[in-house]
Length: 317
Ligand code: TYD
Image 1 (cartoon, rainbow, N blue to C red):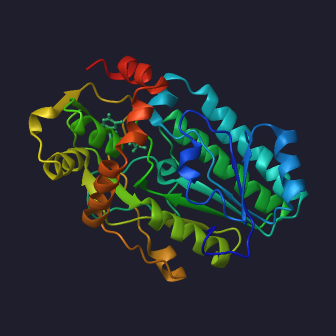
Image 2: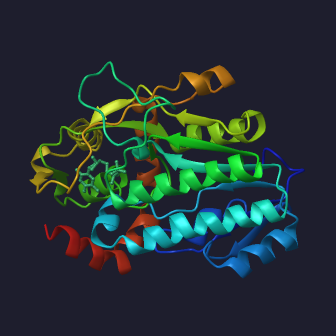
């Protein structure tokens, strides 16, 4: 967005929690239209100050605690950031009369699908979240909806499938697998590895958000993703093969509590708006693995820091 829209001032508001770091900004940080504000979205006065200082007129709300396993261990921060933080942003957006509020959500709010490959999540699928994470996101979706219905806040909600790509924090399946396989460490596959996720390259997600921001019909929900369904085992095997390592690295471990069986998106509504993804799973996973090979220092630094203790506690492999 910074490079595509030089006439927009882009204000990046981020609390820089454990999953954030400024090295991700290195190629844009000196651009004249880019500004960074280290702010927690649940800090009302700080958020309102940023809106005032920069005369914000468009909001894309990406900020969330997003790791399901962490929400099972400790749900509280998910409610604080994802629910209360969203309410603060909505209040600021209302107060400053923004022209659009795009709320970035997740297909996990729909709950799970059975393995039947002909069923998909549509925008009309009822919300049936199963984890504290997805329940916090569903709650925020409903708040956004209510600000549209009650106050007329111009908004859209996007619900994406599982993202992957460069700079993905190495607690999520794909970067976790790449980093562990490269270090010849066991890869923990939950349960039997048959759960299915629908993989969306992060840049295709961003192009969808850009489109919805500019063309989305106010009040509408748009699902993002589709037709890149893989079992977790297929994902792990693909990465191991691409890196020329042995499948002996796979370790089946205890299943996640409340583990959703399958997610799969019907993207036809967004396609009608004009969205076309540029990656399929094969091209996207190749590009992502290459990025992790070229940026080993970035993830090695994360793995040797605070995250090391988290991982040892979580998996003890
Ligand atoms: P994850 O990347 O945590 O995303 P989400 O839970 O939001 O879908 O997990 C993707 C899938 O991979 C999910 O079915 C859980 C599974 N998984 C493993 O089998 N092992 C792991 O170590 C992790 C982190 C996830």
